[in-house]
Amino acid sequence: MIRLFVSDDLKAGAPIAPGMDASRYLIAVMRLAIGSEVALFNGRDGEWRATVVDADKRRCRLTVGSRIRVQETGPDLTLVVALVKRGRLETIVEKAAELGVARVQPVLTRRTNADKANVERLQAIAVEAAEQTGRLDVPEILPPVKLDKLLDSWDASRRLMFCDETGGAPVLEALSGVEGGPWAILIGPEGGFAPEETERLRGLEYATVVSLGPRILRADTAAISAMTLWQVALGDWLSASTT
Image: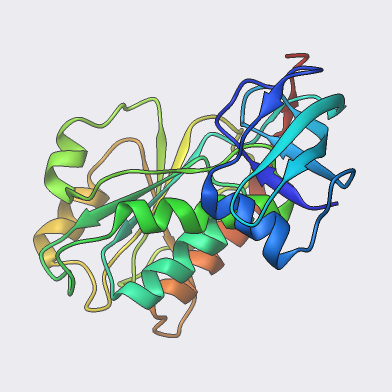
């Protein structure tokens, strides 16, 4: 069944009017007709079955039926990643959504080789990935911020897995016996962290310094590897809700 993320509240009998782009996707691309069913989710109310009740070339209307799944909450995991070129950043966001992170925080570091990000486009990529992967929420894509400023306001209850290209313990070894909870993964720029950044990060009490192996990885490869290894060590920690 086709899945569609909506912002509307979902309950039995509720009318849903998808935007023009979503309507065009359902009717023109996926060839749905009146009576066709789709699955809707909004990140709050679980997943619901809905039926197309009206459609033309530009718009369609849906009516919500029964709930398919109750809402689930994934791991409280933030991916902090230095800004990289657009294509690689889009790949990182897509894979982060597929791998279940709660939010993506782009950062500006001393050696960042990009200075801006199209947050709206990245959020759209995250929505599409969430629709395809079966998750019931969409990761939040936050505006870029300087690394120093982010660390100045960091909540020390959130552990930070610092992926340090200069060396550290293997991820599975470093996270052995560690419990779940609020976590973040930090991935640096293509040129690596500046020495003063590495020194500060290594001195943080809430940071766990890890190595992703002996090879030099591009930022997108490093992010995917780090998220995968974190999940192997700590799992998804899904919790169901009855909302």
